[in-house]
Image (cartoon, rainbow, N blue to C red; front, side):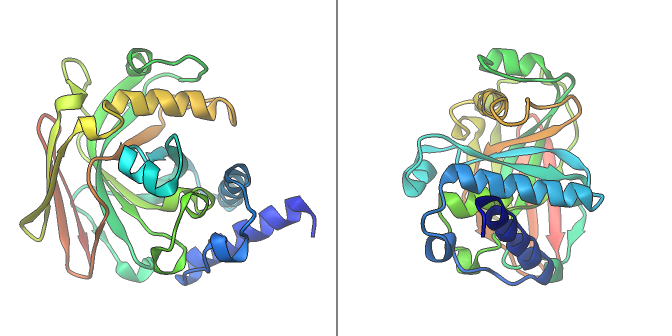
Length: 260
């Protein structure tokens, strides 16, 4: 099997795992010599396949945006994945667990761009100039690897383990100190986490700038109208049928989603 065929075959396996809701063996076992660069090629093949199937891109997500996760994955920078229009769930809406394998949720800050943004050399201040609106968000991750036995290669190849996302109201970023935006996350009415925007690389705008510079190496940048999930403010929290997740952001309002 040629290298290109190997990449395409692994992409097909991830797509089948998602469709059939059955976790795969970890890459560390099945493909121990796969590099992070090759894992991004698998992700690219997954995205291309979904686009050929009629899906539309909604934007991108950034992951591994705090030092603890980077140390755990033995990496020196974040990772990214792609979001699709069909993955968006309305604020206050519901998600069927029958569509997922073993989901976990995180609370994030989301940007929607009003103009294209591409590196190299994008700064946090420059990134914010391209932003049209900011919103609180809930991301639903779902690893297509069995038992969440994941490292950096599993996460990257699996499109950043993206599954669904929920956005709150769009607000203008003017006057918002994103570092100081506070969050309280509740599960079934009980607090499970609290945080601030500084949990995302010290400033969510730094995450957006990193993404613009990173993807410029691959596909040219981030496009006007795209949504960017800047990274998690909270640990990943498992969910079960009947769970209600509510995220209250100071200055950005409330976002919620129910699992059934």
